[in-house]
Structures are given as C-alpha cells and as structure tokens.
Image (tube, rainbow, N blue to C red; front, side, top):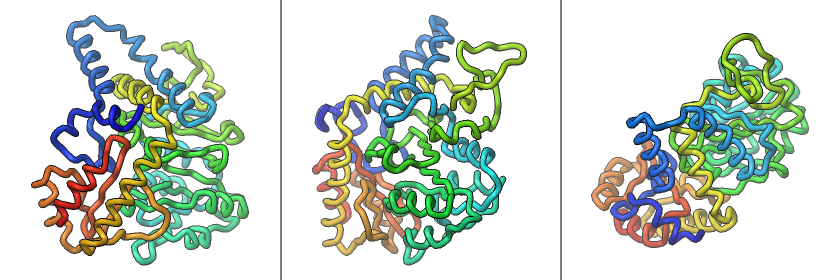
Length: 358
C-alpha cells in the first residue's frame, strides 16, 4: 500500500495536519472500526469473550512477524514501563546506565532494583561517547531509546551494542518512538531486550506493548506479576500450574479492547513496505528541517536524521498557538517544538507547517 491510499484511512487528516504522532496518532479506520464493532457486540451481549481473549496471542504472532523475531521470545504487556520493570527485576546485581533526559518510563523502572547511572546531556543532546564512557565491568545493562522523545535524536545502536559487548553489559532498547516508522534489524543489533508500546507509531490503542527477550536470556526472565496468563495455552483458571517455558510467562492479563485494536493495526502495518515507510518519513522530516532553517529554526541536535524534527525556540507556546490556528497538530516542550512524520503525512503537510511557522 502506498502513502496516498494509507492516508485515506485516517479521517482526521481531512481537516488537520497531524504531526503529533510522537504523542499519539489519529485513529486508522481498520482499528477504529474493529473497536466500534467490539463495543456494539459488548452492548448487545452478542460477543464471545474467549475470542476477545485470543487477540493478544494473535497480536504476538503478528508482531513477531513484523519485528522479525520468534514468537516464543515475545511477551505481551500493557506498557513500556512494565516491560522495563520486568527486565529490571530479572537482572543480576549491577549498575544500570541510562540517559538522564530519557522518557521516565525508561528511567524509573530501573531505579527500583538497581543503582542508576544517569548520563547527563551535553549541549542539549545525549552523546554516544558519554554513554560509552559510563560503561565498565560493574554495569549490568545500558537502557536507551532508539529515538529520543524530547530531541528526536536517533542513537547509534550498533556502536552501543559494541560498547556493551566489550564490558559484558546487556542492552535494552526502547522502540516506542521509532518502530512503525523506522526499520529495526534485531538480528544485526542483537539487543538483549527490546520493547515498544504500540500506541504511537504502531497505531495501536494504548495498552498494547511488547517485550522481546533474546533467546539466550529467556531462562532468566521472571514475570513481574504472575497470573493465570503465566502458563502455556490452553490456559486454565484454577489450581497450581507451572510457568510457561517461553516469554509468555511474563504476559500481562490482556486488556481485551487494546489487543483487538492492536491486531488490526498490525495487519495494516504489515501491508506496508518498511523501507518505503522509513524513507518517506525521514524525507519529510528532512524537508521541514531544511525549510525551517530559513525561518531561523534549527534542530536541537545534530546527527543522523530521524522522522521526528525538534526545533529550539524561546517562543514555543506562541508558535504552538499559531500552529493550532492553522490546524497543525504538534507539541510544545518548554524551549522547543516537536514535529513527527508518519507514512500518512505528505509534502502538503510540510508546506502547511512552514506557512504557519512563517
């Protein structure tokens, strides 16, 4: 499916330039229609809750295909923080290195069980060399976001993987701000763990998240909150039973509606060419960056292009108000304004945004 047809599936785009997917995207018709049908069935009583309960397993299989991993390595959870906390509780003793300005869902979970080494930014950016410099043999794990929410900064995961390997540390990667817009090659990066909450670039309802654990780390993984879903299917409800032998033992009890929507979102994303999606999204962000430079706005960080463009300004709220007047959805973050481009965006969205900024 090409970008024109894809764009037609988002009714909100008929009246709004949506560049706020780093916060949340508008609903795609296949997803919202599935949820509407589910609500109708619930209201009428004409539903089968066991079918609803199977949506998480269906989404696990679809996600595994999308991410290029074995379904047995995938846990279905409710949030990124839950994924991080699951890993944190399963780790051996040691320090955890994180960027100090990372999103709090990739900060707070680690601090409960481990000593946190928060690496401060320099000149407004998380520096790869500073993260690497914080690593030593006493570090258990480095936890990073592939693309940072606050800066739109795309980190060099290959360099970080090599650095963690040198000191025997593990690597946890948060893909919440990238997967669905950018490709991720798990076989090349070899993260020990990666996780994504699907309610941003993967177009899911909030409440559907995945944790992927490398096969050689699976035996160590422990459920954060064991429940009736911690066994292998077919699931039972009463009495004692052993935990599942794969990553399913860390599954959270599913919020049915979230997973019903996630299945439809994954069907939709699976119809797209991942390479085309990344080139399209990054290309539009680059166009906006180049045109905004002529208006005196510059990215808060240098480095590799991503699909998220964040500009420094001391007039963020005024700019945000002007964008709203022009029906452009973006986010003001204190001293900066953030724009994110998905496959449903087009060059007309860039032009409309530049007109509003000017």
